[in-house]
Figure 1 (cartoon, rainbow, N blue to C red):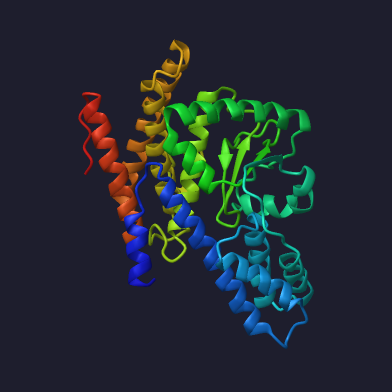
Figure 2: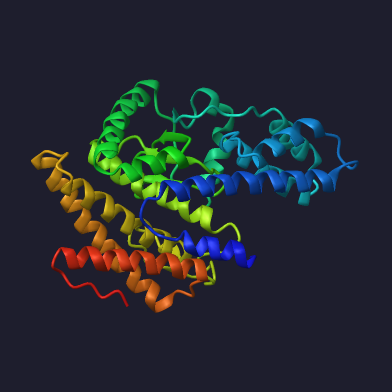
Length: 346
């Protein structure tokens, strides 16, 4: 990792919403993808027939900051293993899909995981999300009526966020292009609340059966968008240097997770605490909603503490991971002092 990129990542590692940082990360992710596509095309020129002009136009557009949506990232992550594994037909398919991409209009798209324009990509979206061989959440489709009902709840939640936590609303505007709804497997012991993946930049996935109130939805947005922030900060360096095969108890999941997942969970817990605390203090909620936000903030603080204790005992943090944890700890220490409770930040 270059010193300049490392310094930028460390400087941007705060856990609280930052629309300017989200804008920078978006530019960085698109530009880096354009560079990577351009490099790959240069390497395979003359060895594989493909629409070099079409792919090159997409790469140039990405370098210029234009968005082609999450499929640009998804197709690229199909292309690279296909080339390294000498699967020529799969590589040509990925290149053709990239060449066919059109610049994306601004605005948030809400859709079912298998609905409309997402239907041809559904299996690969699920593949990007369901990466744990021991646990599968299914990510089943939802109906059009569920999508419409969710749009109404989302509009209420975003209106609330724009009044009470404008920085979080503006960060979402910068960071998220597609919000995908799905359901878990019926009767499964583990159900997902939300999901995100580094191969799906700009995407939040939420469980349509949860987040029934604007406050719950606001907390989910603060949670899942935090994962995207960390994905954007770790393109050149991981959060930790722990062995990925080594797992630990997670503050947010029933199953054990690698240390990278523990840092993710702890980071987003601090963001969720901030969002719920801000909402509760905003005056924009009724008494029942305010009580729910305060209760959620207490649970978020407890989850942060559990994750932080695991990290202090077992994590081998990278500079980026250390900066992220220091930022979270500093915020939580301030928040707990303001509440009149001592917090040992370590």
